[in-house]
Length: 369
Image (cartoon, rainbow, N blue to C red; front, side, top):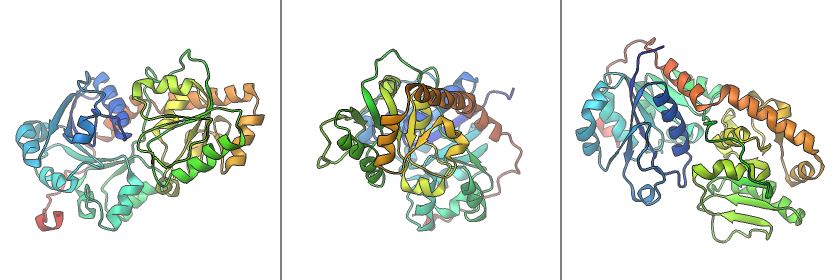
């Protein structure tokens, strides 16, 4: 076993799961790293939106610290940043470009990037429209961890100059996500924050089936949905669902729907944490279609749908035995390969100092703007 490591993460949010999926991912990964004996610090920008919606104020698995400015970040955490075995910068961190430039020459351990939004990031970087990462900064990192695998990993190296690119998918904590005793209330549900590019799929794969099947019950949980959406009468709305209520939510569904952002469908190999959560809870999944899905869920373990008719057929014709068999296979796949502990071990293994020392970085301060 490797010696205990000191690891510092800078991420969008650990304290609040409201309107972002980053918190769930970080909580699982950092909790497992703590269980493995590593010392973890998480640095979070103190912004009003998350401050007003915090659902984890004092984690017992890491040292959570807030900062308001880059100078405060450096001043209050310099010792930890300099001495850490690894400093991991996350995607969507406010003023990320400037922070990366500030830390690149400060960190003496491995300097890494964890991209929870890889297709979005690369599209923005290519257009020089990414405020948390610049193209010139990608070669700074010893390891570029990516939520997206498959061909994107090679693209990170060949097109963007990443020294190493490793898939670090989302994961699930099976102690928190497992079947509960709740009775089934909905035939199909969806959990996700509003996204304009997912909304057409939600319309086609949940709202339209709800209209076609008025005797069935549906549910959509998530924040930031526009007020002008016409929800069918048999679709229940839940504005926000804290992580602690996810297991009960999934357990109350006959099927749950997985929807993927357009950029992640195009890239493929971009599983959502909701996929793993639902599977761990033993809830059968209906998903949109994207390259790489079979790598995570072999054919019999999941249903896919392209339109309302596909969903209607699954809800109306699939036997109860087939539904439960599908759920069992998906759960087995997730618990064998996609737990938070499995992901933490992958992360630590990738940090093994097998690469050359990071080259000196000539920072172009003007281009950091």
